Image 1 (cartoon, rainbow, N blue to C red):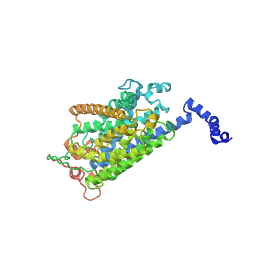
Image 2: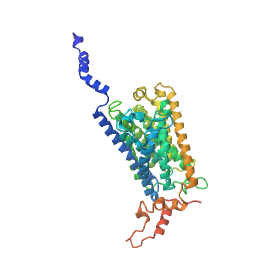
Image 3: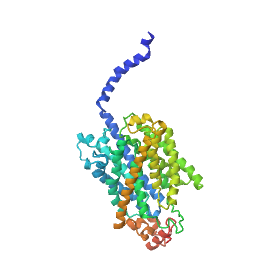
Image 4: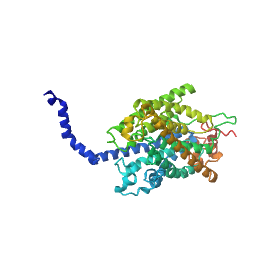
Length: 485
């Protein structure tokens, strides 16, 4: 009697009665309501990532000098526009279109009938959101990667180079690596794990920035003839902090949005990814603060910001694969990398004004490799990508795959970017003249100032300065460094 009346048989009966319709709906595929929910989430996440361009504008302008602030800011607007058009016409097809193991060769200009979307873009068929939503989400990733490039080349690059390289990068560099890892290419076949782009987005941007910085050379006055490194301080640290917070906010679209759905693979999984993302960022900011305090003797404000961003970069590959405790460890290591990496890059005389190579490159490599250590069996099974990490009984197989993927991606992007920049250097030139660099790129490239009150006559003051005197002030102001040649 007790067995018959116990709750367990009654529960099974209720599940059979009430659960059958749900099971039938699941077997039939997602409901219109589920698709609508997934679409709304995907578009909102894409908008959050798009807003990261504002974060880059504040961060990069703040870390550079006032005479270049307008130039730095408008660059983000222009490159986002370039990426939007080129990725629509060419890049999306190369990245996600069906083709071969190297590039996609179908779906140009998104000219695809609704019934053929999952066939032509089979790598994205796991999500039932419309193609337009998939494009809107993926194009902002390309634009973020392109934004990273120019941080490492800031304050001495011709504005026209942004345009030319931006077209090439969006069409033939970024989407190729994207296809290898996300589009069904050869690294995808190997099982490489890069959930939201530590390698696809951040390492690509850093590798191109590294190539450009090498060919450009340092800013005037950055290194003395005796090899001493001279600090060229940014003009607005509050901008740096504001930009960092905007980027942190945008990352809640960047990582969780990469599910391209809110209802599956399990309801709330995107919230779990948001949690690991947040934990890593917080750990990275504090780790960088304490590292800077120890190494530099003070909690350097820009290092704290870079530590948070480096941790966000690192957790981008791992956010869906790791336990919360591992996300904290990943963030701490990334925060340390941010400080020591910036100091190392400066020591070897590579002028990277915003720390792009260390924050996005070194931390991106660390985050990608971390999957080979911390990926858990249950989450690997849920996502059906690769194998568990070394610390979870998976051996070194996944770590080897991650190393292979990082090496291939860096090599392709660095060498192709170096070639493009070299061709541009020997043809039209990639660097502004010495006079233009000293005057500032706002006035030399755009014929206007980002901060006109600082550099133009103050009419009505009784003793207005001439434009020539204003330009002299630009060269001799604390925000500029004179040539040592």
